[in-house]
Length: 282
Picture 1 (tube, rainbow, N blue to C red):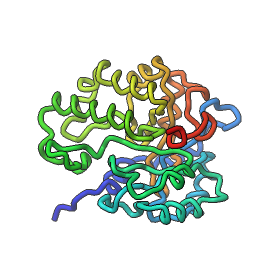
Picture 2: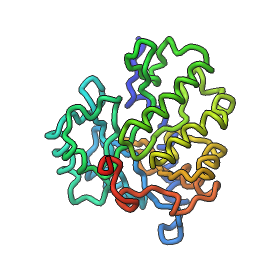
Picture 3: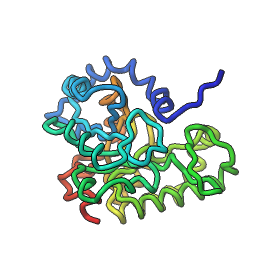
Picture 4: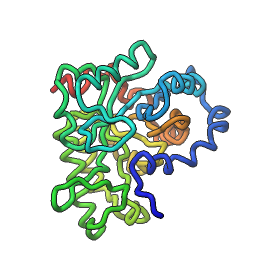
């Protein structure tokens, strides 16, 4: 029997190879005192773990976490979906007093419909990706579920880039997560499909709207050449694992890539340090 894959399962499988690297990561972890790259994982999901379990890993791995439960309508299926002020404030109360950043991963363009602006402005940041995609009939498609009807690779890429630019321009996100990820049918042609021109449109939108680009240890993306293009344009960056317990904080891939392309602390978005979140600027 074939199991329908939701995003939680998909991401867990994608990050599965990182679990076995935990011991190596601890041994090779650069000292926070000597590294100029912030040791922060701003893409951490609690899912079915507790904040106390997660905090133990934060201390063990020397990484500060940003927690992002999913936020949106109940049409979205995850272990936790925050959909109204009461749920959001309960989540924030649970994180209160913990040494973490408080964020959400926004789901689809209607994600704010159940929240007041006042409640949302209590967040430190909003993270979003483009993996939920509008089909030709305008209904949402979960790209990680390998839906049909994406068309040719070239036509899909044109629509996919347009979708990124639209989300960056219209949604109050602070971080674009899982950037340059491609559905399975197209992933093998990553280097061909992600042309400088296509990625340049996304980078231009990121810089124009003050949105940071995640360097994902979970998906090991974007690739170095594209990150150099973003750096040259003045883009800000974050690091994220997209991790569920016990895989959060495994960010060696991102740290090493950031060092390879010459990033320093000033190139990173740190919630609160760069002024108010985009929600508070709106």
